[in-house]
Image (cartoon, rainbow, N blue to C red; front, top):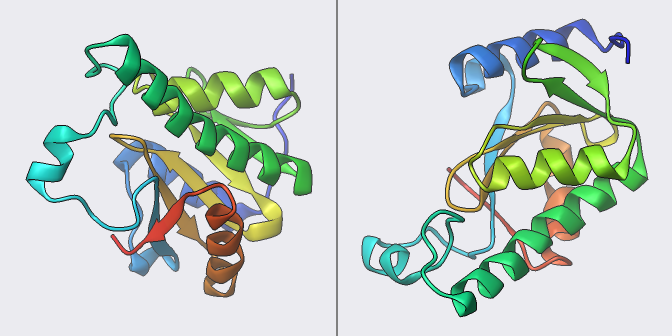
Length: 164
């Protein structure tokens, strides 16, 4: 696979996000968080949720986790079907086109399970998505007008776009 040229401002954001782990409004972006929850959990709520792959303690909790994880996989699959997508190859820090379902699912589940990190760019939505902790995904919008469209699409998969 060979590197692909994407918009230079997006490449700068890819590199900064990969190096620093976050972007700020100073970078010209708007950050939200994709979550299975419709609000930020309190400490007590978080203690009772099976929202981390490494924290479940029973087959029932594992099945619950997989149902929640599948919501993200389905949403990212919908974004992948809609238009061109790119990802940051972690070992080489090269931006590559996302070309297969296997890549999408492997990168997504690895990131959600906190076994690695994913960083995607979906050109149609001018959106960077980065894996986070506890079944959350950081969403960075280069165009704030796209937030409502993603929120609506996410809602169809029982996911919510929260203010950080």
